[in-house]
Length: 152
Image (cartoon, rainbow, N blue to C red; front, side, top):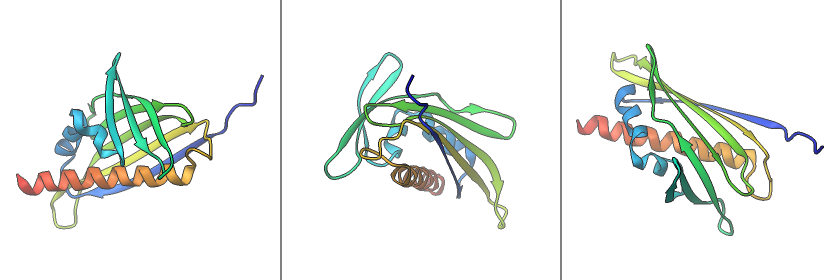
């Protein structure tokens, strides 16, 4: 029996200057996949989305992604998604968008993203690169939510 692949937890937070409801709506639409840096949708297959992304100048990777729509709780919105692909770590993720009033009284969002990953192939994707991609995802989500908020 091969040894179990160690798991890695990536946890990131970000303050978003937009309310959680409008931020969560961005995750409910088909363009939500485009918030992950460098990802482009290739196909929809059996309730999953096949995506491609450039991990480096020399390497493109494909993944099968399952994303559930945001679920409302009494204090937040929770989104769950997972992906797997050749050479990529199997990853499950949870994004919590909670209400966070700002010092100026404006309503904002506290976004907390947790990724649980196993099966890293450092020649394809390492934990540093995954963290950078997750930070890019939160930055893209914040930018889109804040632009939407100021346009309203």
